[in-house]
Length: 482
Image (cartoon, rainbow, N blue to C red):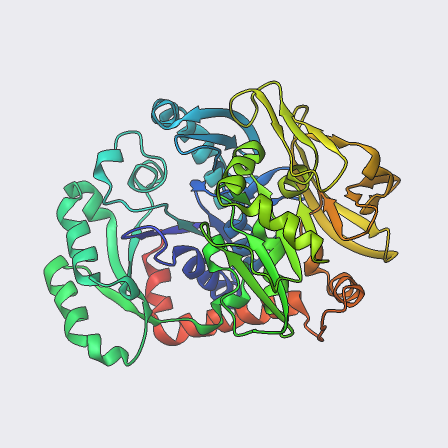
């Protein structure tokens, strides 16, 4: 009989996604069929499923930990922020609408049917479903109509384990305080707690651990130390990229846009030992020693063009190019490099047109269906194949498209400037392909290595599972599932 258990956090970024990925791999190695599930995710870092839909990238990694291809049932509701007050709502892999926060509060209760439909399909196919909450159940002001935490747990009758983050401090108050503000019925759904991200000697927390058990009446399932190899796994948050030990001479700078999207392109580059990858924070100039500047994907191309100019990065990019530097724009970043971006239908915000950076002689018009697909491509200049994916709205045309970046079958993708130092492409994920990454770095005279990126991800998932098996009561966690 299929079972399920849910991990909820005392707040955002307590490590729930990684805990679920590690538990999924541990359960799989025990010979069970396991699948991840997150009712609602808010992220602009999406993954494309084999059938041309999209889900949160964290759930795609968790699926990989389970030995499964990602599918829409693993994350039926995906919110993709486009402005400070509005998000695109993706339901079971397809765009439903763009709504403001208050509008979503009214829409949310109508989405529970899709959430339960997806959850029940997963349960029917697998021995165990490990569910990840979103944010914190302590946000009791959002409890009415909730589909992400206790609202889902109640509707699906799923037991909950509460996860606290000791690295941010105050973990005793995090857990005890959560119990204090929860309605009694919700508190009763929590069957225990665990502590994540401990640094140092965990025995120093023994008294605090016992205090939490005594104050809450909940059993503890262990203290997980900081997982040092987390940087080897695809980052869910742009702030987590480039935190590895590599400090090579070849300097790649990626602009951290306000609506940065699908930034997993940076993960393999950050792991190359000969490269130094900087996620450039707002307010900082583009360093003069940058060899390559990457404009990443964006959920709001015109909005991020304004943001880019507000940082003075448009002036820095022109200076970088004059010095002989290279520029690569990916997806929304490619659109920014052109002469204009027009959004006549207001797909990504207010309708209108914005002047581009003018580093490529192309222009973009937003509209049409979103392109969501995995691709096999061939880079034109290198005559080198690679695999990747598309996830974008808009069509880009212009004279520089006569020099395409790549071909997908017979269709040209992207554009390259006459001097060859500025390039744009709609294709994500290309640098995960070891052969292509090596060829691409070599033609820029950047150092290369024997990094096997995908093998490293698998190794890190196994190490994460070992880590959790060592420090947590995995058997106890599984015994809670029902």
